[in-house]
Length: 281
Length: 281
Image: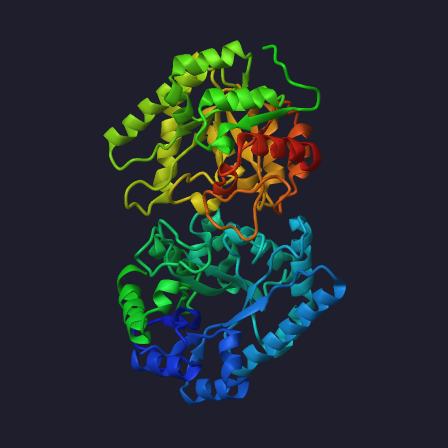
């Protein structure tokens, strides 16, 4: 796919970063004005304008879609609930295919209902990914499991380390087909001394996405206080070098879930993301 | 040491649980009224009455002291700062010895200053423990490294998994002398699928303390919203069985850092801890 990426601006905007009430079209226009031609939208942002219109925006602007956020959320208390979740993941694959996304990112889900059985939840995740994988392959949409920080194990994602995510990949895709891999977000893995070994283990076939933001100290909100690159404690270039050493040539996707940044204009957010990308990523 | 422990009440109160403004003496009196004869005080609580008076309270009431909280906090930007931290850990050992504590618990510290070098901080931790270990051995005070949840990696403790803590133990105490081990708090490790293997690896010699509380969903505060056992998502008995399967015969220490519980009376906190200990631990 031909893109309009500027030299040295291998940056994709995850549109969660720009959640200030703007529409998908407005965000895209502003990205383009800043020379950003790669995006990763969220499903609700696509749904708000309709899948067809979203696909038209992507195509007419020759955008690269580095990922669709997000599938997953597999665990449920009942078999019917788990099947409904799998059905939703089938729709997510179809949406990712319609947008020509490089991958569908999975946030796998936490403990269902009042469960205290995290091993059981993890099994539900494996089962769910196994169920969707054939449809993903047939649709040409790679699935990227995103291990989330352990502080989200209960309520968002019970896959919390690269090691766990790659264990799932090895079970479900032993041939390393490229259909199943991981999305690495420095926010989630920066603390993990095992991450380096796991990035090597992943290799190019399993490295499907690379997300950046920063870890602020202190953190005001466990979900919505992620930092702009450079404002926190993460040695981001060390991670970028590690994934690129494995042959990762994809985009660096900026995903900052932050109430503070959502209060600012798209221009300010984009200007700052690009400046920081060029200096601290 | 002879104790007054009631049958089946193998419970120790970590006095962080009772931080409502009471003095050490008041907390101890209330513990004893409830049949709790084992405590784990914090250094500031000891300092507030003076070490000598604290030791007198312990001795005259024939209390078991299951641990002193806390040593650690090794990383610093300068060599002088690191030495000052080591000196403070020597004092912590002396205090633990004066109280007859079963161990000194270490919260090892996070990134010093504006550092982004977590591997460097971890090296400072290893160096600090190495420096204090001879004095701890000579004083008969085992050192318990407490791996803290990864959400505290930046600002409180850069040792975040049992695996990491045991790697430090293996380097510094390869003979498994009993002088160095781990304090396991279910709050910090409950998410970790690797914990079971690491508990087995620790074995009796390295299992120096076992702390319980619960992980609430949602969590209102990253530091001070720990839950009463049974109010959260942790399968506590599964962890207790795992450590006891390794021969751990020590106390179950209740440590709940919670603004909510600190608003209540000592009686209510103790009654609830004991009731939950008997039903969900």
